[in-house]
Image (cartoon, rainbow, N blue to C red; front, side):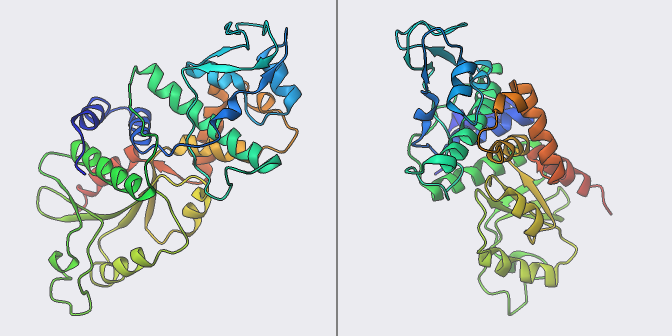
Length: 324
């Protein structure tokens, strides 16, 4: 399915803003979670949101949602500026819609696993919502989108972003038969395999091969089959991967067979990992009292894992064009 005019316009309007690009692509690749109701915790009359969160042992901080642009209302429908005026579930406006990242924790999970999954989802939502609210970006997030569709949309948005970000005359090509690549064109063991994404400069030189993976699994047979002839016959061409993987981000950084790894939103995945590791009974507010501290934690985690963003991918590709 081709990209829509709206998708292209949002990419074009935010080319120089890495966080906005992360928010746009994630928004169009939304993976709706069934556990968004975790945000509707019960607050008591004359209780602050933080007091309720601490009493319930929540693994996330409601201040993150407020700073992101959400408003909390008590059971009477009164906005909670300081204290709830009535006991009952807290409701939020706009509607809370979280993104499901972890496919290992089911919707029926309870206890620590439920706390981990929902806390991570609400942390990431807060960062995403703050990014779009601060920039007045409107994205019609899908409510039901199969995994394969997300992967295709991610790839197509990535290709468009790269094409619009790289110098004039460069090409970003998808599914090129390996036999059409110089050095592989007369090799009988190449077969009918195709590349994922190829980057070609304005002199028709192959700059890099790129694998687009919305999520990452241990079964990397397809990539291995593709890489063998490339690394054998074109060892001069770097092979990179762009991914949006969250739960296995650390494994991607350690174990991926590509030369370099780039992530859709390294800061957000770093924050997600930090919140997931929060021990039961530990206050999220004590660690990260606001979104700024949560973002800083995410940046530190991403740096420790050597996860680079798509803007760094563009910079590295441009730098490759200057190599003789």
